[in-house]
Image (cartoon, rainbow, N blue to C red; front, side, top):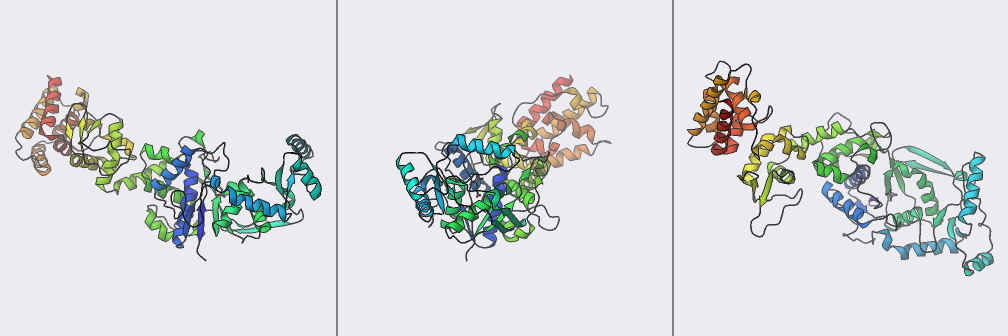
Length: 507
Ligand code: GLU
């Protein structure tokens, strides 16, 4: 039988990194077994389901590269894939449960149930429904419904049984049914609650394995009971541990960024998030830590999934992002960095006639850009600048701090220019030499610029006396790319201009 798994988010918030991990594990499980990965939007809760969150989930799943085989916007044989469109199917099964007396209408009022609950709690018992409406006769039920009395639908649960299942991650799991009681399946004959809709859809969509967060484990016996009442085939279950915050509590908003889109905007690459999230839930069995989705599709195995929750370690995420940034093809990396430079107002795109403003993260835009002081940067030049800085970038957004000096006029501080105890006249002399050398370069190529400057540097007993003031005058920073690279990338006019400006403050 073909493996079919599903990722079934409720669109009640932005796509959380914890959900992304669950989607990823499902995706890998399906790919490894050449099965299907299905996306189902669980939007039965009309009040809490919001369209923009659904869009956020779809957009970021696609950004992560977790392509689904069936789902919204990719209808397959078992759609629709939004629960809000599956009302007819649910109605059919609710009727069947009622006709076969596996389920019954319950007329108890909210107040009554609340009282029962309080009593149970007072006695130190787990609250559960008393079963009061279970034994009403068919005539009584009919009469009360005809009288317009409000009701919900409950499943009959046999007290004496227990439910056992073999969890793919946790091993054998047992639930005593006595603790569950006759639970509510539907608000009325057309409106199922989560457990019923989920069990019906898993069956109808021919799901073979349910892999989800362990916060759903108490739903599993209920879904198994529903399945048995409807003669569905039993599924296999796997409950993944949740991602923990450093304080070991469940990772939530109060710990900072939790949604995939926030990480995306901060400048994490999709492959870094994938790599980081997989290591939170799975181990390769050795100490390798660099993985791409492609590689994972081949290597992943459920057996290596971790049983206990892993702590979300932001430092590790940054480290992994650094590795992926380093190995990203420069053309793509440049396209990804440009929007950050634009956002910080360091560059402005100069649109060619019909070119559209580049969106955050759009690829391969080859237009030119203008710095605030009116200098023009071609995509090719930006590629070289980014390449020079990529090893120091922990996230894409950092390009605006690391390489800002290329795109704006800089303020030079006399103390920054000074190498060790150099006197002002020595400094002025060193900078003069740089101006001279750069002014005499005929063929402005990287090798030429480097050769000429290096030749001069080698004449000094301490090369720092030449190279430090040069680098500081060009960058205005105590940390930057190397002096040859900056000089070359700034071009003769700007480089010499900056050196002259530095010279002025020494006079
Ligand atoms: N809709 C549920 C959620 O977002 C998931 C249910 C499931 O995977 O069974 O938590």
